[in-house]
Image (cartoon, rainbow, N blue to C red; front, side, top):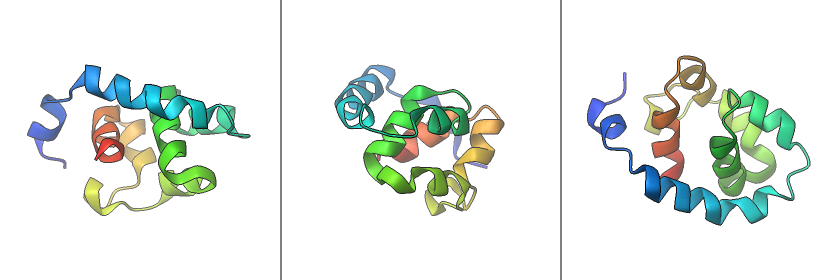
Amino acid sequence: MLPRRAIEHMDTAGWQHFVDVCRPQFASCEFQSELIAACAGLDDIACAAYYHLGSHSLAWLQSPVPALNGQPPFVLLSRGAGDAVRECLWR
């Protein structure tokens, strides 16, 4: 389980600015639709994941992430915990 304070204090305006910075790179992603689908339809998370991980972003979604208490991001996304994944990508 992730600390509640990390999820409760999501700076949505700051996050949106970060995603806007990531979008130009995401525009060149050749597997946008697949990545968005793998991110539970959340294109902002797909955009940030691609910005950081490029062609490895789909694999990252399936991999245990220490910053997410060892859980793969797709598990959290499937449980509706998108903000936890957002915080991880934003850090």
